Length: 512
Image 1 (cartoon, rainbow, N blue to C red):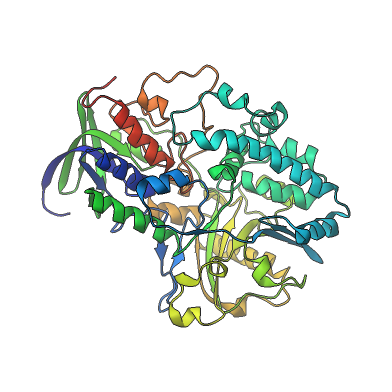
Image 2: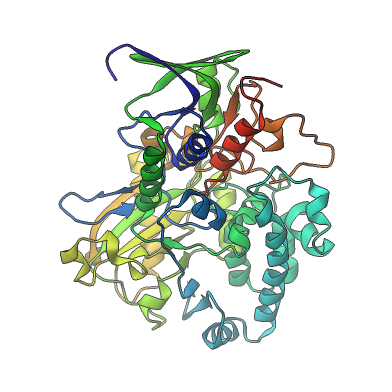
């Protein structure tokens, strides 16, 4: 935007990620004039598809890649034409001489696999008991995510105290070690506590518990599904509905400052000024503080190392399992509990872990529509790797990133009957620093900061709609609508829904 342009609107939204689009639709349908300002040439934030390999017709989910937390109610409310597909394989975790297979609906293959790995049925029985109890917690929390924050007591009273203690009161590592005896099984359970979160499974802050909870409560099942067409299809649909609803979406419109008043806000950038009654922030709270001129909170530090691969075919495994089964779900690498803890300890000291710990999945086994016709007619597949315990500080430059990539390839090759390198058609990797540069996420933190409990604590009171919906800032006219909101994180739209409803809860032009 080059010409000076001053406009006014009811609500201005800074950042055009998926949550911002969700908020804009709800508000526009309620009769509000809404303007979305996005600094990039396109909307979508981290939930986008891209062709990362020049001359190759493959549109990969470049950053975010699976959907779990987005409530079906929200999809239905907005009229999104989305297809989310389930996978037969939940996870496969190779080990020397074999592998632990967990089906999405556990059957005989899962039973035989647990027996082969652990030597009995006891670990599988413990697995079933644990996740049945986790499901009761998910059943209590999931229905509240699109409502004002519940009180902790309302939720705690709905479940057995033992599982509440395991998930909420004590480090999740304690429960894992008490309930399971096998190192690999313990690690498979523990990985959900570490996706995007840098912590020991025994961390007293319980940040890992909060991460675990968010990964298991989506729609009450915790199932992570594949968006047909890739993540770009999700935000593409949101953009379509937003524009059809009358939302004013402006790209290449970077906000450089925000001023607040008792009766509204003003967002400014090069060549434009937008005044509004309300401002919703889809950017991280750290970035918002800079725009407002507030004291900066601690800068988040992301911990994931993302790799996108295109291979001519899936590699064969030494265990003999069909690669189409092993890679269909989450393929764990170096994720026994002892390996995870060793990787964390080393990274916490500022060093790159000696062994890669992370997981892969193959989008194209479930949905080949992201490949062009010629490529789709071959055996080509995409592989997405999400590395754990690789924080911003230990991947400071390209040399460190190349070393981390080599470690991932070596860790994967340990379980393959052939090296994977000759099969690779295209590769790109994204460190937290590269994610920060591309998306403006401080520290490359995919959640904009540590996740928070999705409820009001014992002594916490919601004094106004912003607090009631978990989207408040210290500025009454400024609300959070992105991953930094109380129930943000992941591709869910929950933060956007709740910010919009907080605005609608206030009387128009009246600040509490």
